[in-house]
Length: 254
Ligand code: NDP
Ligand code: 8X3
Image (cartoon, rainbow, N blue to C red; front, side):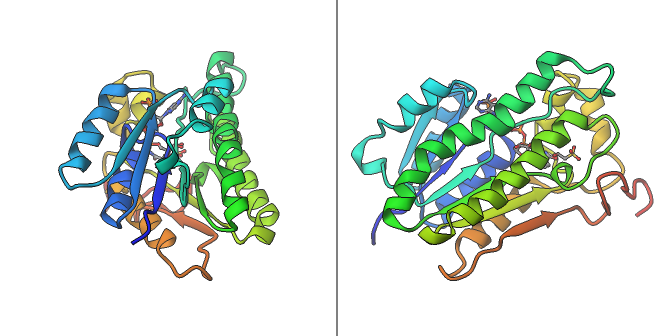
């Protein structure tokens, strides 16, 4: 069988890690990226126990030249990327717009938006040349609605939604599938990062209801990418049952 390769950004934790595992179980060789080399090493060891081919790449998606250097010099056997999952991203801070930190704003725009573009810029040409490929962009319910103190994070995810739709339009002549996955609350390291390491505050986000798990998202991504080539699940919003919108969450009642 011809080798199929999936590249997952932000595979060191949460949704990205679970997606790398799920796609590996579908038969994909995995290129896993992130900044934390120790986590990538752990993922590689775990998957190699199951005889899955894994290449790890350690870089910050904000570093435009590094992204270009690393992704343009992939070993020959890893050059053909069939599935790109643009997952790397986070929220940084949760403050009203008049109190937000410029460093946090820069991080969210640079990682969630520009980082996604830098990675895509290196991978899309090969897909265009081969007239095939699937791109999965991880947006958010925050890319569909704006909630109090979400301001710039919501803006970054609205940008991901627009870029996803723009990719689908522009890549349509080339037979490339573009899928937007927009989760609601998923328990990962997301809130620990958002609240700058405050684990107690982070836990309260997911208390009183059953949040989505990273595996819930990963299974959906695996389902979407494994549809027949003529099918694209273009826009997937996934919420926990207890969540009706970005702000309506049925806590402590079920
Ligand atoms: P985690 O914090 O668990 O994972 C974030 C991942 O992104 C890590 O692997 C991290 O790797 C990587 N990452 C962050 N910044 C950078 C960077 N500058 N360069 C390279 N990689 C980076 O959170 P989630 O799994 O929840 O988040 C994954 C995606 O899902 C994000 O885009 C997030 O916005 C989105 N999302 C999350 C939801 C949730 O409720 N959790 C809901 C909706 C969407 P490392 O630190 O090693 O670089
Ligand atoms: C993550 C979900 O609601 O915290 O994108 O923005 S939320």
